[in-house]
Length: 227
Image 1 (cartoon, rainbow, N blue to C red):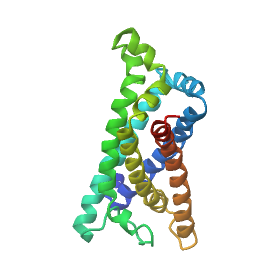
Image 2: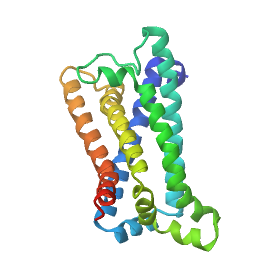
Image 3: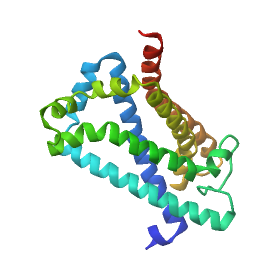
Image 4: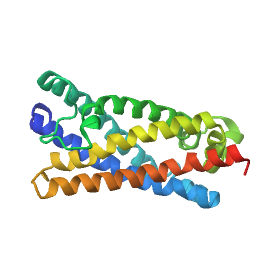
């Protein structure tokens, strides 16, 4: 099958799944930053995206997208290692400013995956999973509806703030290369569009990561200065 057997097909799948995940990250970052301004509004959003059928369906689709992106990323990395030594995450043109990230996409991906597992344990497992399964009793069910509590609980601990900040920096490097590389893999690779795609990728990646990173930074400042 072309999408599996062909190098171009695998890069196309990586591009499609990557673009889908970037859109999710953009939505998720905008949603999460609400907690800084109004914990009540954030909890209302969490309630809307709780154990409803559309949220469950969205979670399954997202999980499938992550798995596909991860598997194809590993396949491409192995292919690139065999074909071009240290080069990672195949692209047709190496651009200034992305050489390091392009050569270390697999390493960055592993860091992000480890961060994702931690994030799922700390938040998803205590919120949507509890609502879906009903496990943990009445108190756990009440806390599952209070996402702002879990954010404040974990980010009041400086170690978690630092871990999240480091992971989000890795995400920025991964996205700055991944966004424009994904678009390139989907055919937008002419000389006119390639520089523009790099700018778009940098802007989108920076916006997403700044929104995410503002939350642990905010709570870290509050914790350090006792505000």
